[in-house]
Amino acid sequence: MKADFGKVAKGYALHRNDLTVNLFESLKTRGLTFHGRTVVDLGAGTGVLTRMLVEHGAEATGVDPSAELIREAQLIDSELGESIRYVNRYAEDTDLPGQSFDAVTALRAWHWFDGEAALKEVKRILKPGGDLLIIDSGFVSADPIVQETMGLLKKEIPGRIKPAGRKAGSGQFINSFPVEWFAEWQAYGFELKELYNEDYTVDFTLDTWCERIKTLSWMLHLEEGKRNQIMESLKPHLTRLFGDRDYDVAHKIHVAILKNV
Image 1 (cartoon, rainbow, N blue to C red):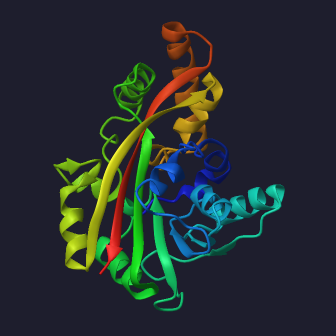
Image 2: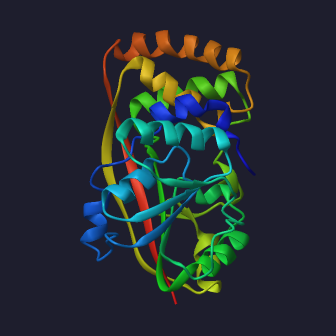
């Protein structure tokens, strides 16, 4: 169930920061702000959301099991003049003090967690009435660039392309989230306050799009040489169809705002 993104830490840091800048404005319109609040960002990776939380006034702590991803996060923070705390632990066992945080967030990570164990830990560290924000985002399968890319990947790595982590075991989704999660959230005392999604686009060159694809969980079991070989097949394929130019790839963000009751 776990995925070792530390294998592609450099590429992850460079090419998986594609999060809409409108996220915090959309949260604000729904009554959720972070200024002056203590926040734990679970599955923080290279700190994309953690840094945004700090930029919006939060005292944020990033938690991630990959030491390699945390190192990349700290390098980025250093370049930006930021000093953010990261904890090298799993979301299910953060070792953080109980009932000490105003909010917990998870960006593109909840499907990698043991759902029940993670909810128990969130319940432990979150203050009563605190917020749990679960976010999923990524490129849209209907986009022509994505369709051609995934079609080639399915030929190169047959049988490997399926929903990631715990999503693979679900046959029905609501706003990108498996239906089973809603029952889990409720069972552990988290009330769903808002559920929404928004469209946005991300600009890639041919090279940066290929580097982005190399960081997908489906690619992690492959050796670096094999990943590069697949990209060398993908580049001329996309160039032939779409040209060697910048691609505006359609993305969608899915957000669940929950309250600890």
